[in-house]
Length: 107
Image (cartoon, rainbow, N blue to C red; front, side, top):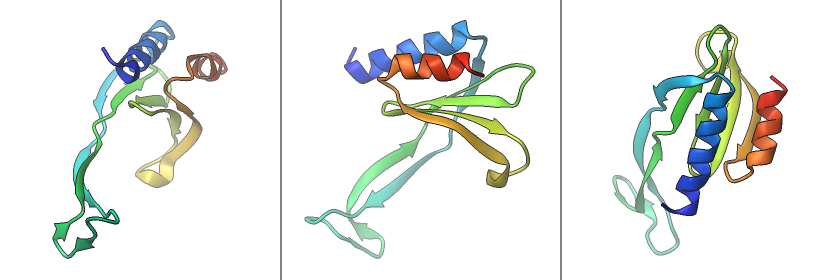
């Protein structure tokens, strides 16, 4: 298991211990990212990258959710429909387990 996966597992264990339950994954998209060696021209060039597919968790009985990715973990609250209803609580590096623990305990 690589370090990113170990960090993700530790954060997921922390969320589950705090009462969060799995709630699917975020939408996954493949996009072309331009680079100096491979600029994007129309529908070609660039480097294919996959964005999204982060594990999502919800705290039952609340509007608080969390997503866990290899690099970042986000805690947020849903207060309405669509993106306008999303209110960020904290976005932290997944490897910063103590900071995530502090944020989760403050909820």
